[in-house]
Amino acid sequence: MIGPLGLAVMFWLASVAMVYALLATPVEQGNRGLMNLTESLGSLERVALWQRALWWLPGAEAGGGFISWSPLAINWTVRAALVAMFALHAWAFWRCWRGEASSLGRWLVGPIGAHVIMLGFVPSNADVFYYGMSGDLANNGNNPYLFPLYQFPDHPLLPYNHWVDMKAVYGPFWTAISQGIVAVSGPDPVAAVLGFKIFLGVSAIGLALFVAWLTQRLTGSRQLGLAAGVLVAWQPNLIIESSGQAHNDAVMLLLATAGLGLAVLGGARSLRGAIVLVAASAVVKYVTLPLLGLLALVRLKDIGRDGVVRTARAWGLDALAAAAVVVAAFAPFWVGAGTLAEMLTEPGRLFNNPLWYLPYLGVHKLAGDIVDPVFFVGIRLLLMLATIAVLAWIAVWLGRQLSWGKPASDERSGSLLPWWTGRLLTAWTAVLATLALLPVNSHAWYWTWPIVPVALLVTFRASAVPVDGVGPALPRWFWSYLVLTALLTLAYHTRVVHF
Figure 1 (cartoon, rainbow, N blue to C red):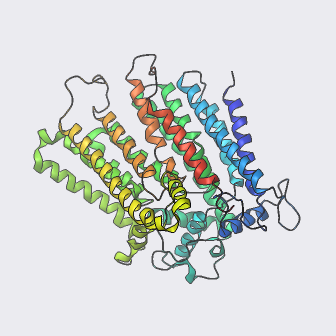
Figure 2 (cartoon, rainbow, N blue to C red):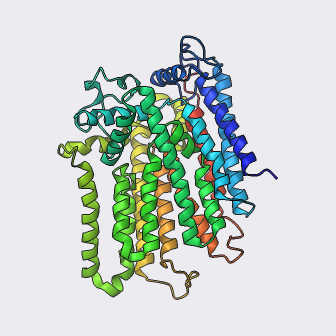
């Protein structure tokens, strides 16, 4: 039986293969045959930057280049590495779920090593360069919510940015964090990127540790805590998109999950503190705003006892607490309503969710440009309305569950946790899965959002089944969810754009 260290070595080998394959991109031969990861001209500039930065690695060539592979070899190496990482993720979780596990520390060796290896992953996506430049601009008295990047043509990070015509689209709390990171690293492109990679890799591991701790508190089972922590820590998207591509989703998830944990462990008396934490996550990325609504709905559980007026007063104080976080975060950058303009319009720029983009490519090949308005306008609008409808349905479902009060016979009636814990976890999971998977503008880093509530939900449900603390089976949808995430990631990152 291969143990955690054996699985870790295989995980590292897959990570090294992916890192080396991307470093071997022939940047001077155009983008024909390259994957979506590196096919744009801007991505190739960022790959070249990393090739020069890693001049000391085996394979580097004199003059700052790197040994080149054919696009076909690169593509299939990355695909094989991704498949291996997703398979090892499932294997590691299954071992822990079945009780064939050791300490959490031994199981974290694999993902921690992978995060270190991913420091060498080419930062082909421009977002991290935006983080660095916006933070540096703010440090030098220039408001990134007021000035687009192109107004600073001499900035060392500008050549590696893509959306140079945009003002800041991220929440002000993230801008403040970016200021701190770039204050340490300076505006040098390589140093700044490494600063973000390290910070976000540590955040991802911190998220996994917190999930393991929270699960153990929710279930009373060390084994289930281990399984949940491993499910999060080994998730390939979380590793690649944190230490590899340096996206900020791990920070957002950590704050939101801290709010969820405070709500269920502290009960009604801690709801306002939970709302503050989730509001803090929303001023990193505003995608977590609907989660504030779920926490507000928890107040309905006592409406029969407290009455409408008292519940409304509590909601008002909750809203003031959330507003205080938002106002405090935006205060250094506020320039009127235009401060929010870019945040509201940015999601309409792209149509890239493989669930909808791949069908578009197939139909476009048959019918030509005539289908563009159908997809880019019609399907976008339809899915936006569908997303709103699903979120509304989730809210109605949770509201009804809570307003009905505690069931006469509850399967966890002896638990010290609030009776509504499972219902809130279910709604939380459904909201983040909907926001990650349904809209037309979706990215591989968005698919990290559901993994945390999924880990909490499946382990919480299992703890209600008295079979040595572990349920006899996972939910029917669980493996389908993992496979879907893997397929979407393969389609998103490794699709060849220019043949």
